Length: 294
Image 1: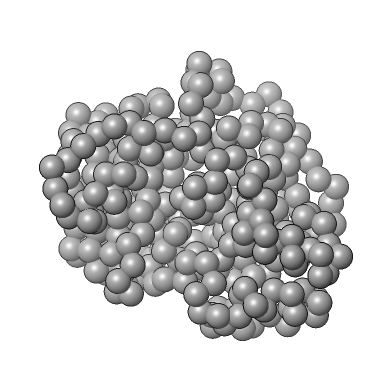
Image 2 (image 1 turned 60 degrees about the horizontal axis):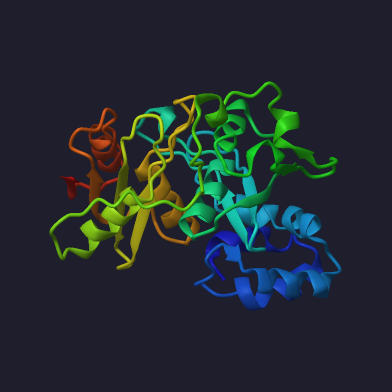
């Protein structure tokens, strides 16, 4: 079992510990459960999906990186596929607070990067802030997305965000998590560059058309891609680096152990990720940064 889960494992109901151990009891646990695994656990525990998601929140919160606030938030994104994806808030010292990641953003991006096409609900141990409500409003789930909190009746995003402003108000039809391929190409055989290019081609930037993606090479030898997720309100947009750091952290990797980073973006992008990406990576101890344009 990953060390980060040790301190919270005993907070879980004993029957959940027994049912979850075959999946979460090793170092390769990807902080997600497939639909089949979730069904098996629910059957063993007598849980429904909502009860299981709420019961998993301590494990999700254990994935937090909070050197500034020391306040851990966990989230579980439930996919239309039946898969459950962990998320947690993430903070980084030495960079502006705007570079932090909220738990809901983390869980949603985790699901998106794993190939989930749509979410049915988000479960979180604290009420979503306005930033996260606006971020979730970009999803193809729309305001029908269910929001679950411990000891509260489930609500919808529409309940949390009345009179919302989002992509529909601007005539945007391709929403966050909709499959897309922008079709850009680069002449290279470099696996890291190609991974970043693939991420850029799947990025969501309908307002600026500033598509971008990144790939991080960890000291563990694994490659972690990240895609830009733009928002109708601009400020809740999630940079590609943050998306890659989400996948790196949530998968059990070390965000301070990236050996090489490759950013790919359009040469005529109105919004460039280059400077912010490079400065944030430098603060995280990664000096080997490259940027390619299509």
